[in-house]
Image (tube, rainbow, N blue to C red; front, side):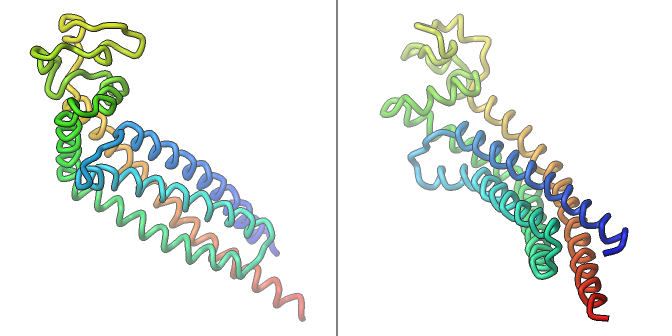
Length: 227
């Protein structure tokens, strides 16, 4: 293999190392988003709320596995493996681009489903307090719209932090309502997903091109061995 082929080989290997890291970050990010939502018992709300974070989590797993295989294919200079990797990477690029476009176009609808999920959890608080407590602790919020929502039933200690033994309305007032806190969290996360996703998709496209070049270089090198 000539110098150009060696250069492509190691650039592809470095790209795949970056993909492995991106895959791990997506897995962590998706897991954090799912854990922040909690256990929503209403089937429709649970489905709508978990769709995006589960898609991110699955995408992260796929990127990790394929990137690991790509590293092996590049180092071993296997044209069949590298070409298969390039086809899979291109398909992954298209899927990720579709996910980013979906999030971009359906941003308002996704945020609306988040609001519905919080309302569902709030309505379930009297039969199952644990989910609302988890949201208030993780998002550092209190009540649905504000801490004053607890005026008639008493402020739970989750509104004052994990170490609190009790909580009064005066202590909880500085905290925002969970609807507001949840909207802020998702608005910020959706922007991160969109722009980070575009960056990763661009790297995937470059990796696809480099993988095709490496596979071609390997095939040409194998042919020259017979002459």
